[in-house]
Image 1: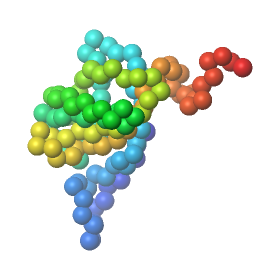
Image 2 (image 1 turned 90 degrees about the vertical axis):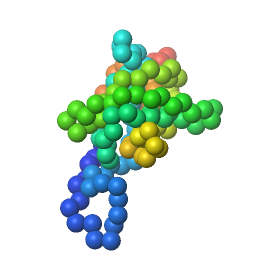
Image 3 (image 1 turned 45 degrees about the horizontal axis):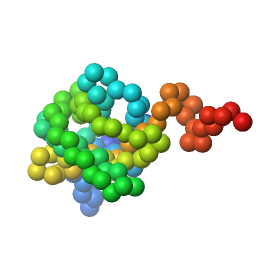
Length: 128
């Protein structure tokens, strides 16, 4: 879930766009993929069809850069990608254009839990 705030009059405030998104949203990724991998759909600051999707594993200090072709679908940037996520792990992520200009930034949390409506960070699989 994310919140979008449209600001018409900035005064002394400067930003990349009148569309401001919260940068620390957490995206939950189902660890099962389809034939085309994961579908990623996010609001964006500006659109570019050729982008770099950066996934940073904070714990192991490993950055993966995936070059993808994105589509604009109702003002959301969408693309498919493949990545081997580890269960119960958080990744930093960002999307940039080919020149490195930031389009979107956020967090991805990977889980094998299938009931995401009732997700629990302390899931007790032993039911004790």
